[in-house]
Length: 524
Image 1 (cartoon, rainbow, N blue to C red):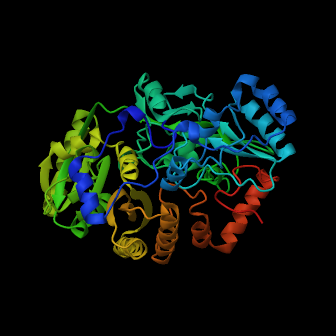
Image 2 (cartoon, rainbow, N blue to C red):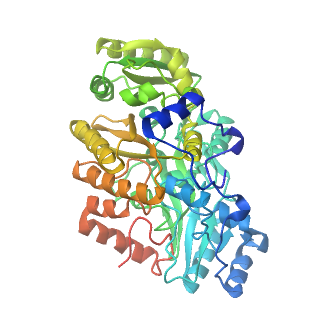
Image 3 (cartoon, rainbow, N blue to C red):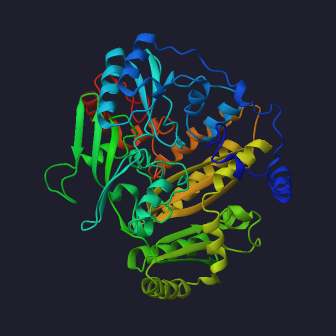
């Protein structure tokens, strides 16, 4: 993972010349005055943890699994939001952990949490490092130091219950590793978010991730049937059955808690049989409203494809639905729908035939397999594009929300108006990324010219759009999570009593407040 950007540096590429000219002519983008620093120029604070505490940590995991070197600290500094990357490109390593600790078992995690609580050391659970909401920046004030708890050594497939279609896996498994292990048993999770190449199973659960095939396989929290969690107070072992009427479901307390309540050390997950066939294709609708109506019809009445996405007019024109082929379709291309079908050949054929009848009946024009295959080929490429745009002097970021179908037009307009009001004349693109019978999510990408202070520029825009989302009745996040960036808006969304409930849970599970302090909810 590139320390100051996304993913594999070998996959990075320069912007095509037409896109560079478009940025200059339409948005006034110019090359940054200050070039990005090199790895060796990143400024790190001195390690604050006393040698005695480091020795205790080493006694638990072994000296080789407590890392204090600059490379480990830099690679565990913050996540991958645009502000995170801008700070790293400036050489600002001020949020680096004092140490990176790699436990190898649930018991070791418990011991580490006990030591950190005793010495008031903040602990940031770390998976793939792909948070885009400030979820990996711990508050230092009042703590002796900060430790990044890297779960990479917890990377096993523990068991396969083929009869129940449930597997137990450890949280440090990256998604491609997990899929490879499951493929040997003819199984799949079917969870393919844009962060798929680097994110971990533990991170998926901690942030309530939602994959691009959620219409067919469900969100990640739908897949979780059991959890084992290490907390400073002890172990939580949750999930004795698929469903239960035995009180509130405590699994839901941990899912989405972003490491603030405990450290997930194993997951029991519902799996599906790996599909024999995958078919993705494109459709065109004349407007975003017409395309939205078609998606709502499929979500409510069926048949629901495995993948179902709709780009608005701007995103379709630019071609962001196909990041590998920027430049897009013609200006009159309308709105692009991607429909994907997975299963046996018979299932795919029947589902595709029935869904196509609905789409064509509602005014859709079939574009064939080309757009679908192009989307599938470039489905993980957009974050690399952001790196290229930042290098050119553009501020580019994504944000997402969700609402009920009846609220969606108002929510769509509110976000766009807010971004235009705070950023001048940015390029704002949107797509419906996940659909439900009752509503859908909206995923926005915004591009504008960097000002002299792009961090302040985006901070003002983010605050404005968060307020717009809450005022328009949307949720502050559908699948990115809360972190620090959405904390105040989340508090407004759930109300004062809701915040008190979360604080009560944290106080009981984490009395010293060492787990990811400042993330999700502030303490009294």
